[in-house]
Image (cartoon, rainbow, N blue to C red; front, side):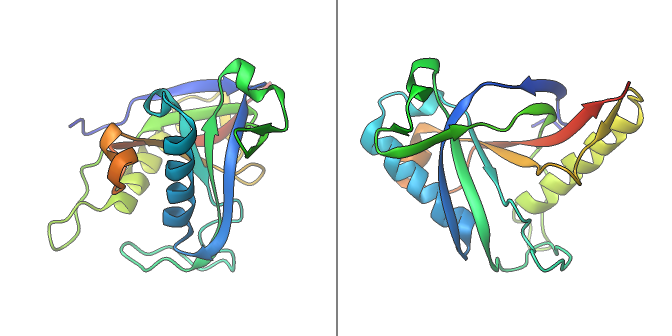
Length: 184
């Protein structure tokens, strides 16, 4: 596995998505299970899609700080799948609501899954925080861009294997989408 994430700038504008919104305890698991079940029921090409998730008000809506290994509290979460061009032309696609995908510039970086907890188990949250730190350094070294984290939410892209669609578990990979803007 790589120790540093690949970082690139992506611009998104007119894509459409289906999304599943939940507000509950451990919402990521619930939203992705809804997405997985919908995909398996309605699509034959679900492994070739792009999936992003977002906690629109953050993982700690009341402003508490995140701690590695903490239990997930109740909060809102969206799981989203990008649609192919012809699929996004209606308000519904195979029973799921269709809406606009996130728009704008994003710094997209791979999450190297190489951080472990004190028991030697993979720590996805710590791996994401490490990728975030590397992406922060990238922006510091790229003066023509700055983050828009106060204006737009960040997203986590989930990379799913065929096995995940069959039985769940952890995604096979992640990418962070951090909102940025080009300075004049």
